[in-house]
Length: 333
View 1 (cartoon, rainbow, N blue to C red):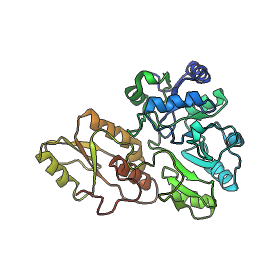
View 2 (cartoon, helix red, strand yellow):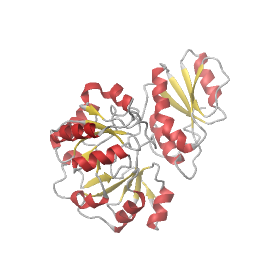
View 3 (spheres, rainbow, N blue to C red):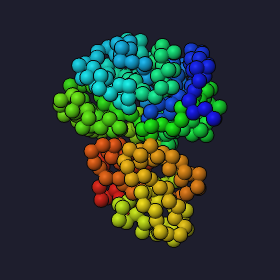
View 4 (cartoon, rainbow, N blue to C red):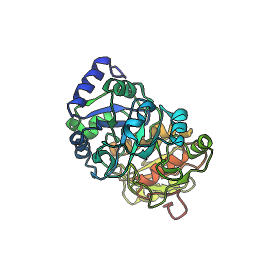
């Protein structure tokens, strides 16, 4: 079985996109549900397919930093530095939008989020299309993002006109989003490009977003969620918490690097390495639903330099807890 789209698949995808249809495509982060970002009617189909509120902004994917002036009215020096350092890659930048960018893409805001993905299939598609593609994750709104083509087909079925194959996503969680439209850079969503990496390139502090920050994808308190209820726990108390729910008759899974020595508790095993955990996280949450679990007890990974902050963010939102690092009151154990 082929693991990457062929040239003929790319050509078909371009024809569909130019006709106002929807095409799902792989990026290094997750699979995106793409539409011509200049076609408001096509973009509206994304919201309908996902069941996503129409006032939510979308990320526009472009082929290179040279396309920025087509979409942004002002490209500050900070954006130029970050593009040189991290594009193509898992970083989206929020900039003042250029004239002619549809409200359907920006959610009516005066800004637009832009990124150049690293996946070869995404880049081939963007170069052949020669335009911007609005593309949120290719799943129903609020649910677990897809990291494999089969996830898109399971989630959206015939609501997407074509799914380009690209294998499993290398990063596995959504891109970092940094807002550069104001006086100081603001981290809206953590990802594989960490706040430490941003600060090193910019030579200045990057502030974490507060409650009144610019709206951005994936910032709702409940997001990336399986059907099973997700509860966060410390490593020391996760098994005892899972045991309690199992004793009460629930079908329970443990999302952890350590296997439980307990009969009746399904292990949703994660690797020890944080980057590998990010690649596997959404697959394990999908496994929870495939197993028909009622509850997932998730061990919170340590908040350390690297992708740990992004992992915590995704788990908090899967548990419906929103922004911030978990504290003792968040841990259900």
